Length: 367
Image (cartoon, rainbow, N blue to C red; front, side, top):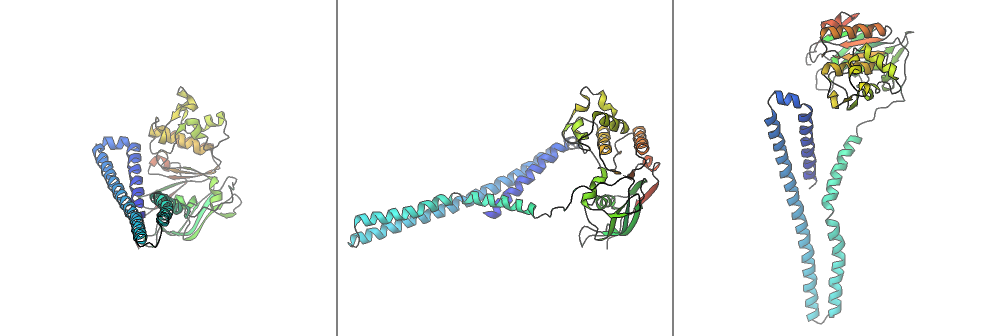
């Protein structure tokens, strides 16, 4: 019963994932003409769920049937014993009725409790899934610790891989991002660019070596989660959330004034916002629905500029911009933040023109 409840939960999660992903990527699904595939995939998972639920229901019904048969057998045995004793004159008719009532008083609470057994099992299964989440270790942080610009970064003999069996992503890797520098990180897919960013943001911890800040006085400060506020990160793709353009921008700085919002949008070449009828209060759906990819990227860049971070990390943040708009954005942000440190993960040649150094990562061979 417990195993079947686990299977039902897994099937329900799978169905929800298919629905969410097919709706989120509806344009891709339609252009690839794979609507029928997802319908069949969803139907197949629903059939599996239906079959599992039926099996669980049959098992539950059979269990209750056996339990009720046991109760009925108890009544029958009590009645037969009472009738035998009554015929032999060993007990009175009243004593026989008392025995039958006693059996009923014992069985009724057990019968009522047995009806809740499937509910208990289902609840326990759900609780187990929650306990699995609770077992994930919490990130230890003592609160945000901002640093004053300019701030650089240094990696010293860093080694990292995700599992003991997998290849090394970085091994004995050392590199410096000087304060106020503009670094372009290039490399083939799988070379470890995303892993490097995770190490810098203290989302993962190196197995060997150190990742540190270097402040303006040359002081070395190990990077830990409480220092993450010193970064402003713009990830790949569309990272806007449901709400308005204003609410998305205020994620970068909840106390920002309209003038600060306007300035950030202008630097990010996102002043198209002010040509919209509702301006900053224009709605945008999940993942920036209602905006083009390029517009959403520019708003995400403006949001990062509003943050208090003095190290900007742009992960293919201009990939959806045309060459002229990309040039304007890069020129403006580098000019307006001369004391900030910039890290660009890119494949675009325009970005390299503004880089003071280029880091080329290469995919390491499997051990």
